[in-house]
Image 1 (cartoon, rainbow, N blue to C red):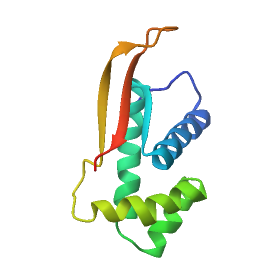
Image 2: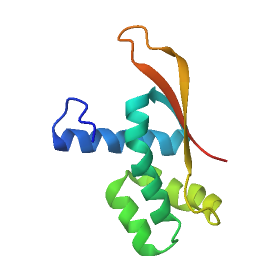
Image 3: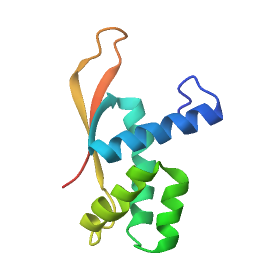
Length: 111
């Protein structure tokens, strides 16, 4: 588990924010470490949303902001109803970030 120089609560909020951005934009550019950390978290959320039950919607609302939970439940999850996993892909970029040299990646939903 990557700690990102944060305490537990800050780290959870950080991952929640990254997941929110990924769900609303469906594709974000971030560092490889961050992409690898949010991928399993978001894939679990998609699997929960695929159940299409009120309890799963409420579970998403407890873990995400309202707009991203609803988008995941009503728009993204129905796309993957016949898929058994692998909803996200990480594409590593050749260039690294100038200011700190961090390797970059794009994380996006597989169509």
